[in-house]
Length: 311
Image 1 (cartoon, rainbow, N blue to C red):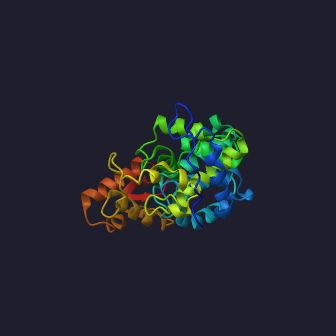
Image 2 (image 1 turned 180 degrees about the horizontal axis):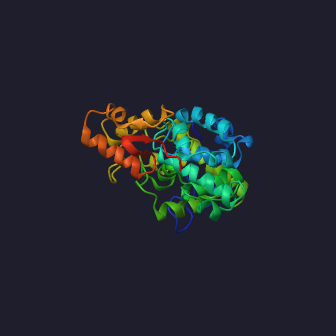
Image 3 (image 1 turned 90 degrees about the vertical axis):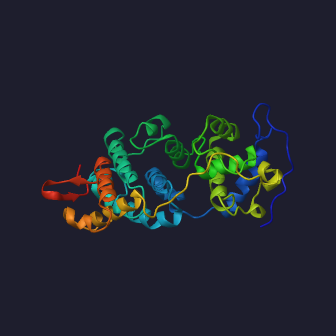
């Protein structure tokens, strides 16, 4: 696919990077999305709001290819929030497998419990009620309201923020943490009607995931490359604060993962000696195990045994 050379258009007054007619961005991105959107299970109508919520928890800092098999198994076992809430939280940790950041499993279990207790087992459509659920923050509440219920919300994940940073602001990468300026820009770019706004949220996210990637971006396939401020400026290199890395080998995260793997694979409590065997460095191993206990991911028992949490 060749790029669509969208002519440069006047900007909205007071909001740099926002065209006076935002549809100049909406039309080509939505047309591109109609042709290139991936067929993902959480985008299908049968997924429902619970399927969307599960996917949003799993996709945080985790690529789609790793999420897909776990997502399918999860929904087959727990098709409704009440099904998950009826199980011990440790079962959620066990089913999480190697997705990483396993506290997300506990938060999803807590959200399912709250949905069951407060909302009759149905994921609420109200944005404020979503935001009040355990483990649901600004991004997840907006994503569920938008993708599951077709509402008009600014959905700012890493991919969307990168697209907006490049196309509208003219920088290679967004700040490490979402800023008030980014929120204002996202709201200014939102289409007025709810249906188009929810499609725009999904389309801009897909554009960042498939084309406007963190590395090796493919401007030749981008439907708005002709008005991308960063490309038109000659793609200046990032000159902001250093970007956070994703190192893993040798970190406490790796040790925690190995300890959890032993516990997930055992139906019975595990002796401390079996956990000690997974990592040679005793201070780091003890620190990692203590962290798992403090986070509620592991329960210590009498006589030096450990298990996944039951409550």
